[in-house]
Amino acid sequence: MKKSLLIRIPVFILGILISSFGVALSAKSSLGITPISSPPYVLSFIVPLSMGTITIIMHVVFIIGQILLLRKNYNPKDLLQLALALVYGRFMDLSTYLLRNINVDSYPLRLLVCVLGVCVVALGVFITLKADVLFLAGEGLVNAITKVTGKQFGHVKIAFDCSLLVISAALSFIFLHRLAGMREGTLIAAIGVGLMVQVYGRIYSALTPKPKSVFIPEHLGEHLVVTIAREFDPLSMQIIERLSELTGIRVYDDELIEMIAEEGDLPVEYVRSTEDVLRKGLLQTFYEQTFEYSHKTRYGDKEKQMFEAQKRVIMRLAATEDCIIVGRNANQILGKGRGYFHIYLHAKPYRRAERSADKFHISQAQAEEVIERADEQRRINYNERLGRKWGQAIDYNLCLDITHCDVEKTAVFLQAAINDFAFEE
Picture (tube, rainbow, N blue to C red):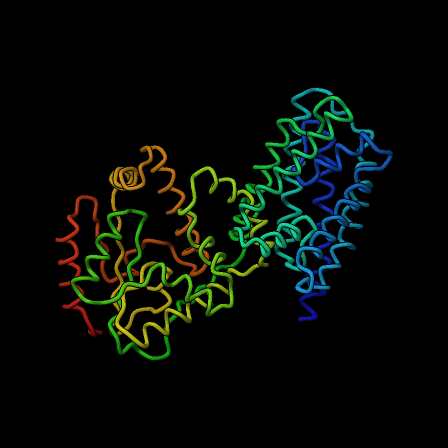
């Protein structure tokens, strides 16, 4: 652990330095800046203090806010945020000084510098996430508000960013009689930072060796366990529910969320939001996904912990009762064995979009977006966690195209297939 920290702490500080340089670069473009940096940017035109110094002061205020909100639940370790603020603010001033002689006059060049600044900020954020040591005071305050109010982190993050922008706008109009620090670059930063963090994450995942092992239980199952993986399609859940009624076997889907959270000592909200973004509206989902790094900052990198808990829950269910398990990579967690029947349901995209539009009362185009995002999330989850390609026939006992299937007939067919297969090697 100590050896790990000796590596992670310098990496974390490097991420802080890169982020602060990115903020200075964004400020150089004069096209707007990230929401968290907008108040210091505006105040640097009003008071005789540098943007870095004002950032340090703002972070101190955020730390005080955390202490007042959490009180006895405040972790003294988080006082290290003050040291991070000093490093962050001072290097921001140094970066501003180093960039002082760079002239950015034409709009295309300013736009290029703005985008470059966003990419640099995102790189710094990604590095700090991977180091997983601590979080800056702004994220710490959002975390504290979340704990006290019980609201979802994404909701609080949106409100927090909007509040900072409102404060910056008010200060601009009152003291400068114009709007400073908020232009098209602010929108680019608000959306672009999170998106670029995800891009860096995918590049990192592509360059990182994937696990090759398949999770197989030590003992063959004594119960009938049906796992059903599926593309996003409302019809598939109707079929699964009818199959449960016909066989009398209990379905585990949403119930697994609380079981996994309890097993892994994780917040239920974290498990739910990590594995299912479809419960949210399209715009909200898109915005919160761009700030995925903020959500991870709240909990640290808990994905591995959640996946390990998921494995234990599924293995325990398979060892104790007959059950139908929906998704959660259950087919690979259990592997091929006596009493395990793995099903994959898929359908043509246009039919899934039609059914989704009708089910959720949205347009065909919106339904296509939902389907594409849902399938991509499941594909990434399966590919990265298991090192295998999602939807390969070899991973299942039965792959079924339900493009034009009837719920009742399909459920009866699956029941017959399961009965014929049950407990065969």
